[in-house]
Length: 482
Image (tube, rainbow, N blue to C red; front, side, top):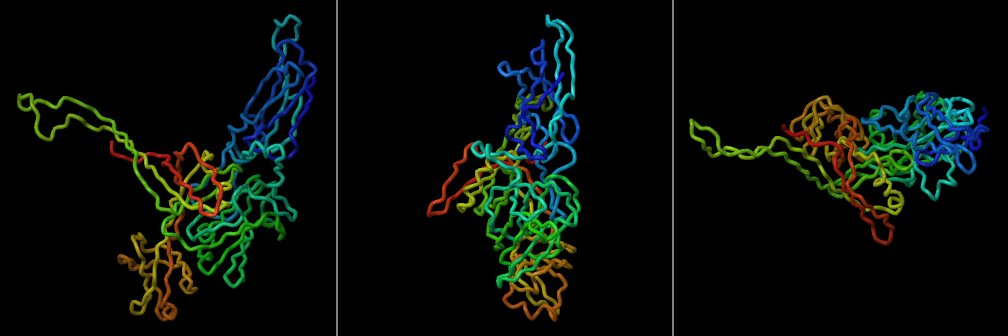
C-alpha cells in the first residue's frame, strides 16, 4: 500500500475558489480489481467530504478535481447593518466562510483477489497533502495560468499589496455612502496592524488617525472606509465639505503594507441609488447611479370565481355589490430601473455587477439640505423636506462653516424647524450665508436585490460619456393582505 502525491497543493498558498484546484496521486496498487483512489477533504481541519475516483486508464493516476466540492463551503460574508469598527473580520472560523484552510488525505480501496469477486478492502489516510487556503474569487480564463495570489496577500514587510477589487484606485464619494475594502492575510491582527486614515483639506494639510482591532488570524478582513462608516465610528462628521479627499491603507508596525486608496469627497447629487455586489475577487464592490430611479410593481393576483346568485330570503338572486370574482392572494414584486453616466475607469469593471450572485442596495440615512437661522436667544435649523427627525436623534451636519460642521442632538422639532439647543451667543457670528446638508446618525441596512438583465454590453469609453442602465427587482415580495 503506497500513495504518492504527484501534484500537491502549495503550502500556505491561497487558491481562488471558482478556478480549478487539482491534485494528482499515484499508487502501486492501481492495477488491482475494483481499485479506486480515496480523497478525504478537510476544511478548517474538519472532514467534510469523501471523494472516490477510478484511475486514469492511460496513466493510472488519480486526478482529483476538488474546486466544485470546496465551492459549496465558500460564502462571502455581507454585513446587514453598519460596521462598528474600521477594521473587521470578513471570515468566520467555521464553514461556510469566505476564506478557510484546506487539506486532503488520500487512501485507496480495492479487491485483493485475482478473480475480482472478493470483498473491497479500504485503506485511508495513507498520504496527506500540504495545507493551503481557499478564498472566494473567480480569475478570468486568460489570467488564471499566471495568477499569483501573493499579489493580494498582506504581509508584514513594506509593500503595495493589492486589495481584493478590480475597481479604480481613486473614487468619488459623498457623505452618506458606505464603502469597504477586502483583503487576505496570514497576520494575526492586533495592535501592531492598523488602518491608516489621512484626511486632506483644500490647503493640502491633513489629519491622520490609525484604527486597530484585535481580530486574531481570520485570513480574510474588511476595512469599512465610506464617509458614513468612518463618521459613525468616530462619532462626528470628520469627513465633511472641508475635506478635499482622504486616503486609506494598511500599516504593520507603522510601515505601509498595502496599496493606497484615495476617496475624493464630493457633495451629494439630487438622485442617487447606491448598489453593492460581490465582485469577481470576492470583495464588496460599490457603484452609485445618479439618475432618477423608476419604480413599479409586478403584480400577480389569485382569483376565485363563483356564481353571482345566492339565497336572499328564498329568492335565488343577487344584490348590487355582490362579487362573482374574489381575490384571495396578491403577490407584488418591486421592480426598479436606474442609470448613470460612467467614466472609463467604471466601464473597465462595472460588468462584474451583472455577473455577481449577491447584489444589494442600501437603506441609509437620507441627506437633507438645511440652513441655520436666529430664533431669539437660539439658533435653529430649517430642514427641507420630510426629514423625520425626532427628539434625541443625533444629527451630522455638513457645511463649509466649521462651527456647524459637527454633530448635534435634537431637543425639539416643529415641522421643518429643528432645535438642537444652540445658543446665538455661541453660533450667531457665523450663521449668515451658512447652508449645507444634514442627516441622522443612523445605521445603514442592506436590502437584497436580483438583477433582471440577462445581457450586458461591455462598453468602451469614447469622447462622450457612456450611460449604463440597470434593471433589478427586490429579492423579497411586497407584504400584502391575505
